[in-house]
Length: 601
Image 1 (cartoon, rainbow, N blue to C red):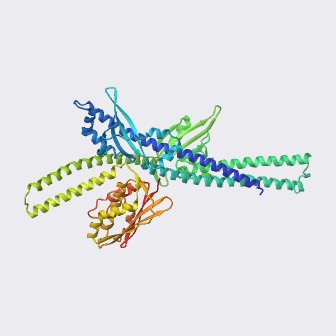
Image 2: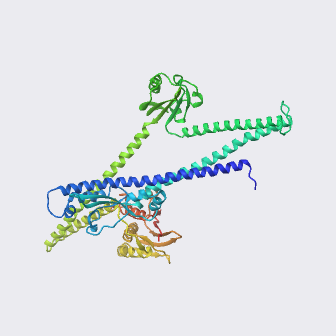
Image 3: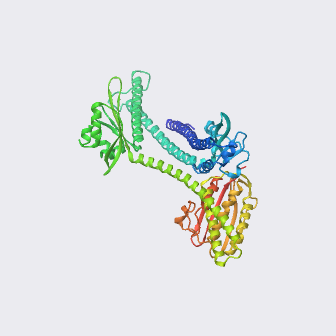
């Protein structure tokens, strides 16, 4: 098959566009991964330095005994370690390790006194190439640590280690990847279409010039044409054809460049204005049209004093700058835009070469959008501080609860035969203390990410084991549990205890939503080749469509006795395993929750 010139040019433009977009997208994604890891390292560094400083203060206080024991028993050090875990959504543990590798203080207290696990560092992850870093972030969840050494009397004594989970970094990176890929797709489609259009425009004048030369050769023009041969007429025809091609090519290129420039500046949210040296409008984009209230076609060539009235705030700012030819940046000016007064940041830059002035460029930036961004940053910082505060408060609540429970048992033992009313009151007090303790424990599990301990898990067997735990209580409510387990179901690599907690929370919600009894159906399915699904279908009251998007939100509940933590914990545990939770519900007929987990070797 023989390709014509138009097809060849379109193919070349398409291949070049794909290469450029793929290269720029790859570079952007590589930089995005580095930025996400670097931000996690910065947060870990901040936490490690705070723990370091508090530990140094604890060791500097007068006292005898082993320094490690002093750190282990220091209340302020322990409170800071516990509170630090809720500071970052990516952080899973904070610990102090002595020079021998033994854990002195750990955010999970049952690990203290054990040998610390050696883990790769965030610095090593940053030093990897973009491809290796992406492979780590999108592979199985791992713990990377930031390590800060600690010296005592000039000798290595201990180190502060802060653990970051790559699985918790992944959602933040995935949002940027999706956005980058969407923009790359749009850019590829737009550039490909523009390339095809440019190819067509570039070939059109060639065909027209060929027809003109043909008309000259046929004698259809006033000038006598000569046959196409190597003589003066033939040479003239060839020169005319060459000249016409060059002129047309230059014209098309100029139009294309101008159209491309106009398209680029028109999509900007900031206003851009170009002036000639004598203050005449050369060009501005659509964002500026809303400020000057006049389309570009009517404003090109007008002087600034012809475009804006003397009292216009922009005139009062730009006239002195043009007279002195003095640049200025980010001057706040209130301007009428679309019938409303808006604050804009105005900047002016004068351009010149060694011989003459070339003009000026003025930028108009919406201050409201900048304030919105600053407000979001401030709000995020406040939320992080609130997380640290509430985590600390929860820890403080647990201690008096434990003391109250101990003294309540002592009171029961001291009463040989208490009256029925007293005994009932003591039971109510104990029940309420235990309920409040469950609320605090659930809150702490949510705000403090747990470290995964994956191992091969049979989801069908796990679902049966969890059902056995709630079967007696479910039968009291008139609820029975039926199983529909697929044979030959592959095992998954997961933390069995965390999945047990997630399945237990789902089952408890299921039978609590069935006041009139019924059946809970538990089924498993192998969604080849990469997923295993476990579904829990009840015949309860169902969930209203307006509430489906909120059921996994922390503290959201429709039950009078609920605390709104159970399903939030389910959502977090499943996503820590790179899985998903799907919900289907019909009011009055029941709800089906499906947990899907990936199969990993």
